[in-house]
Length: 340
Image (tube, rainbow, N blue to C red; front, side, top):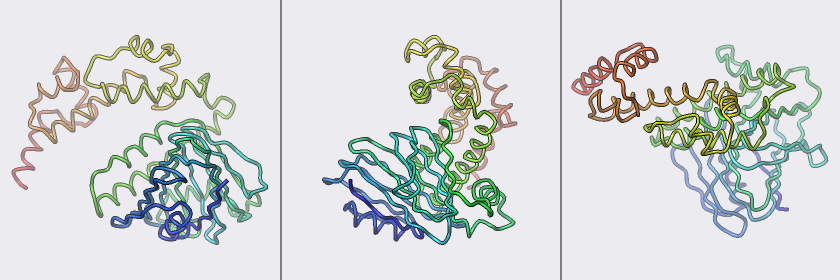
């Protein structure tokens, strides 16, 4: 097993240690680091960026060719670590002798150590893993003007705590979607940094919400869903995103993915907070807004392009979501272009 020690005080220091352990080449773009690896140790890339107020974001998209132990070193800043697996799984322990806990796909692990023990992450050989680690430095989150970070501090790092704390959440695809959005940001420079910063704060808000919901439903975190069925829900979600402009029925989805209607609806309510039909409708409306803003299509063409057949129905639900008619929104976009 290959052991790598990480100092997370700065992104720059971490990436120097990662390159020393894994090889590869580092690229720095604005304040973002990318380590590309393709050698006998593994293949893939590791990205990281330092954000405002003591928050950093690291993502491993790797397949290692040997077992890896990541030892996140003790630090006086006593950070809260939010770990999330979009793909694959890992094990965690506080110190080498500590009890191991497993973090599976789509699960969050929240880690704090008042005892200042090392966080040990175990990554499996030949398993493709997409792992996100968000660290929030405790000493920098006490600003009275930052409600989100004060909430994180109060919830996950109590001042009088005498024991290490680990929370393994139930599966949550909403977080996976936000991570995917970060991966698809095309902007560069300060705009990219601001977008990443905003999405990371949304992820942290979802973590707080997840922790609260799991506390309420502790005895039934996944309802009656199995982990295999959670994976199917993700596949259905991807299918809908790719086929949003076609006619999609519950019967078709159940037949295509081998899941019952009740399990499908339960999964969507758990992961997206709505029914399948509502999810499809919301996705289509979002795409419609993009088409109106970014293309020369007229309203009828937009309606056809998102899979609707009724322009009046489209106008009704567009107004419900954006408090504005499609034609008025289109007119405003054209006015803005002329003014620019």
